[in-house]
Image 1 (tube, rainbow, N blue to C red):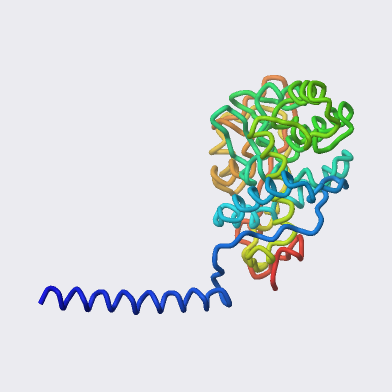
Image 2: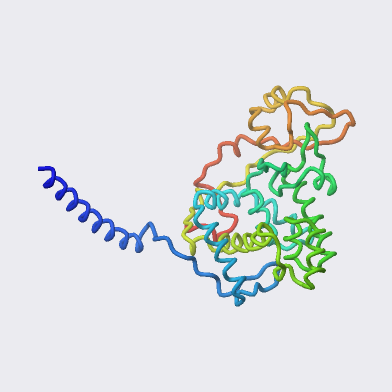
Length: 315
């Protein structure tokens, strides 16, 4: 009897496997595609310079980062959705300071577009500034105000860093590598290895992969449908409208202040993540600008969202 049951179970398993195999084949034609190696683009540029895809090391390194990014589906999709909110703010600042638009993809891989991201080492914000570097490039960083979390000010600071590094290297890819490894390390390696381009350097794995992670992000963000990311306008996270309020005095209780503005403390902190405490200490009379979300923005209608980049969406 047990033997008969076992035979029945085996027969059922074979049938199920056949059905599953058939279903998998069908899925390749439909909603769920089989796991596959993504095709590399015929050509790719970074900051206006062609990437040498004919080089085997370049090709294999880019493939690795494309696979890593593509098959972290939820994180990549979440970042694509958030790009609607942040790229509209970031791109004009990059342009104003003469930094190539491609550097927004450096921001993507630094923080996954999480404006309150903080690394175990202490790097913070969209651009993941360390405290000392943030202060060096003009940001206020302390336990009450931390402008590494201020989108516009941190982007300006990043632009200053990029322009300083470009004046040294004359190579935008070297600038991106220096953002990860430090200018001193990249300069010394360019000298020691008698190289003129950062992609020709033998570097620690983190920095070598860093450059190709930027390239992978650019390719996927420019062609999301090609790589299986099907977004509709209503899925995107649009910029939240707000009014600006300037303050030049201390605010003893930000909970009370938020209530006086018709919003919650949580909404105040989300719109102004550079506020790091329940009060704003301001003994020097410095002028700060607070963003106060509007009711319209807080309760936006997803159906009315307009895609910042039409390439992102399928409708």
